[in-house]
Amino acid sequence: MAQSILLGAIDHDRSLPRLLAGQRYEPIDELPWSDSGAYISRSALDPADQAALREVLEKLAKSGAVWKAFRQYYPAQSLTGSIRSR
Image 1 (cartoon, one colour):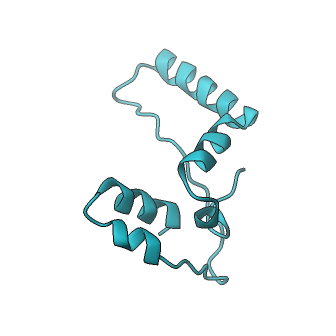
Image 2: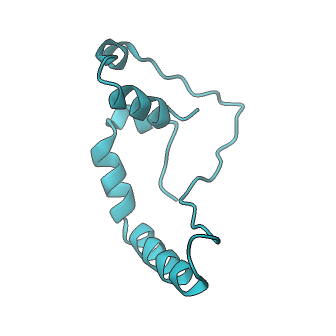
């Protein structure tokens, strides 16, 4: 599990603030990097909307806006060794 997922879950439940301070993260060097991203539904959106959404998301990713917003939400130490921009 990426540290950002755990941080998001802990942050969402305000009854667990002590866990944020005591969290420690150690990457496992033997595990390879993998891709992650957004899911665009094929059943809830028609093909034209799927294409429009894909185009917008790809432009945002290429511009760096998604990565910048991601870094503003998560503490820098939680991203080191676990999440990187593509």
